[in-house]
Amino acid sequence: MAFRPHFAREPLVVLREARPLKALFSQTVRLSHLQRLLDGQLQPAARPHCRLASWREGTLLLVVTDSQWSTRLRYQQRRLQRDLQALPEFAGLMRILIKVKPSQEGATRAHTGTVLSAEAAETLQATAEGITDPALRAALERLARHGKK
Image (cartoon, one colour):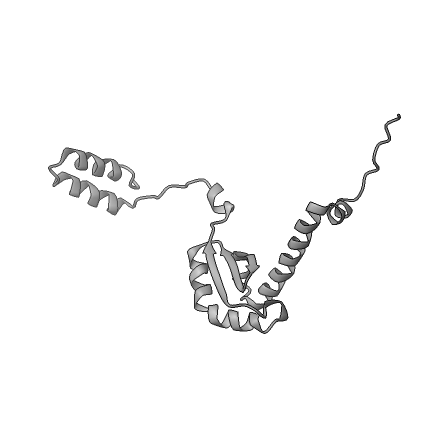
C-alpha cells in the first residue's frame, strides 16, 4: 500500500467543509455581519471601542474598552436599542448588556511614572517635618525626593 499525500486545499474550503469548523465559521460570519450593523448605529468615535460579543435569546452583549465608553453607551442605550430593533436581524432584541474589558494595548505600555512638581515635593517635605510617626515621616520624605529639582 503506497502513501498518497493529500493535496493542499485553501483554508477557506477547509473551514467550510469540516463539520466542527463549519459551525464556528458560520458563527464568525454571523457575528461579523451583526458587528457591521451595530457599527452603522454607533457614533464614529465609539466604533473602535465597542465590540459585539454575543447575540442570543433577546440579549445583546457588547464589550467596550473602558468605563468611559461604557458610560457613554449606557446613556445612549435606549436609542441604540430602538434603532437596532428596527433592523430585521435584531427584531427580538429585549436588552443590551455592556461589559468593560480593557484592551491589551493599554496593558503592554510601559509605566512612565508620575513626575512630582517642585512645589508638591516641598509641601511633602514640610509635612514630613511635622509628623511624629517615624514610618509615615520616612514615607513622606521618600515621596518628596521624587520631585523636580
